[in-house]
Image (cartoon, rainbow, N blue to C red; front, side):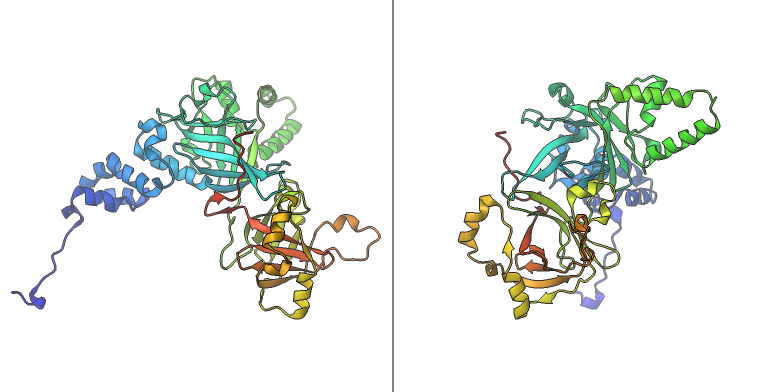
Length: 456
């Protein structure tokens, strides 16, 4: 028997492994890493470039737990195309908010479907409870021919039935749907606008991979193609185009009339629209973390009947700001938070007797529908176990309209934030006699307390 020091390790190269093991190892790499690996040997070029097993393994490893990859494109598209498409779609998953226009449904939620990406409008219910309403309105996918297709429901009444197994014929089955283009501006801005042609299909423009402009395809006249190159809902490009045309027309009043013809075609196209463009901005930090326990999307009652959405964020100068989500759609909304504080140092429990009196002397705003049940669960406010407390030293709340005849500085309204053991928190101001308790809107990528609207 050989001694341990006489045993020599057997060196194995990558080519010595079975092919299925090679594919399994390669599936952990990114496409750029695989491209670099393919350059090391001619033998690996076909394996990395054309072998569907590799791209299937990559898709399966990355998204099999989130969607049914065999159903995308009716199972007739290459997995390499599927991987590149899902990689671009992946950034959509999560919460976004409307930008540039007032809306009663400013919150947008994108999630994985069995063979598509579904976008839903999320808004507070008016039932006097903490329930929220989720209305699907946008579906994004790939046809069996490998063409990207996006359909939008402007009314919010269409539901994908179990009989719909792909997006090839969705626009024919559901006549109320509108073909749209989805334009990605970077990673945090999306513009959704109506497709200007009679086709519902789209394809990625190769010259705009960074911008990821999704434009229409099909047999088009040159003027129609020019129209598609102008994105009436895209900001800031549309603004810069308008500024350029304005000064160009002032300096060259004669011109060749191309700008006027372009504006005329644009007006005609706008007159045929069924749906106006919408801009969405991604909410990157939508959930609390151990380091930032107040961060994210929350819901709470400003009075006994009105449920509202709030966004709490930590700014670059170390402060914490809370804003109503509906206010973020309006111009100059960033200057009107519900509260803002530069103090982020929490005071751990137990609190002083003075602070306990401040908390216990205030009532908690609760929905009328849950008031009776809450009395049975929480007979008194002190049943909410306080983990820690934060002193607020600044607010821009609704005291601003009351400035006339007031000597109170609205920018210095003292208040408190109480974090509870269950991860939620409440806040209130010393000038008021109530506490607004907030709950999370979503957790682990799933919307909490979603209302059942199937019977509506």
